[in-house]
Image 1 (cartoon, rainbow, N blue to C red):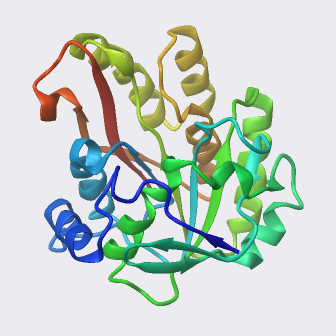
Image 2 (tube, rainbow, N blue to C red):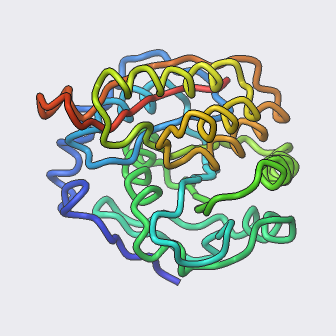
Length: 267
């Protein structure tokens, strides 16, 4: 099974040469790298959020096994859809899906094998070139792609516990793909996003879930973020660091309607 790019040439360059130039401009090889349990990175077009993503990926070691989790923007597929097998293509080449991890994960609630949720979904696709580039194009790189629809908090906990159980003996990285506030003023975005970011930095998944819903924060990836924090804590995470926060207004100059982007390392 081959998953072909859906947003190459739109969210990021569609040719390998141009894409490498973009990634070189965002990623810094000279930065010291930490061993992280998870990262939170944005998934907008690279021109808007690539700097935040690149700075974050540049700070962490990228192991062979990466679980890439994001929100389901299309509504297709199961509530917790795992791409079951095969390879993902990008302009930089192909990355195999880790069938061993997938087979263990889909035996556990609420995960189900379902490729349909992934066909047009951009939130995971835009992460794969960063993983390829920032890992130094390691030949053993593999991914486990998961997209989530909205889940009750109890199911987020179950998903996080299941993921931690599968990953507990593996050297892996959980990549959580999310943007923060959408189409609000810069002032509102900074205020609301700080509430969500503080909960993440405190490694408090329940408080993150509560704040996003209580304050109506339009953070599209609150579910994968909640799941990822639950799993990271069970895998031994002790802290988190905000690498960078920016908005689309920092690129466009229009601060009346912005989207917020945060890069966070959980270690």
